[in-house]
Image (cartoon, helix red, strand yellow):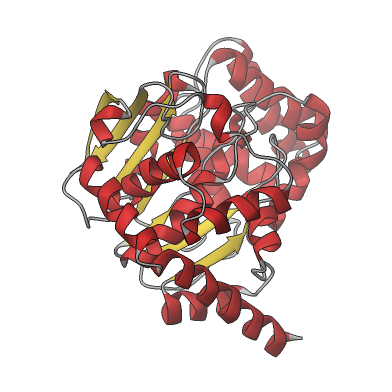
Length: 350
């Protein structure tokens, strides 16, 4: 049995090194071997490096994502109209937690949000880090997270708790120290099966491919965004390339800050820092104390969440709704509800 599985990994590696693509089924099988702990660290490193050098196809990414989903823990909830804002990271730009702030605003606007995220991989502060600094209990169980979503319309799913099989790839990922297909997989494996997503991507050349993958995985609406100045977010410093999945079709176009009704700012004005710094920024944006670039980039991305969630007919309208949600105090209130609810749940489990 072991010999056959090793040959399967070896065959995949030989195929990739030869420049041939894996089929969706082959990619699923390879990832299943990795997730079950039956591949060696050398085999994992070889396969993901060969994929990176060849260039991952839509079928390869989809197959890997399907296998990772199959080996994950799940949060059981109604998937219709459920939004995630998980991005890839990897931009190398130490901005603050824009997608996390945006997810809270989207929930305050009335969209059900199942936010999937992790601790920092490439920046200083991941979504789990900043939520923890804000006072949110991030280690509640899937059952408790489902209750949180049902009661207040938003929950956070800490990736480490839902993807235990990824531990088998941890050593080669760390020792390789390069971007691989694993950087793309987190945002493609929402444990609640969200059918809508705003996904920030570090690689502008891949937005359409990843949007097509989301369609293959069953999502109904999505936007994959990558800015011309290197952000895995919608930028307020440069145009942003968007690949939009709608009605089974993917359309790619650029949007500028001005088209969203927002000012253009230097990218240096949206930098973040340690978790406590970023948490303070989010609180200040929600309270109305922080205006300018920090607020505007959150409006751009929260507006996209509201648009993908179906509550706005355009990105510009979405940004305007996001501004109203902040100014009314609803975003601040939603964050307070999330802190309170997760605290109560953590207390019960303790």
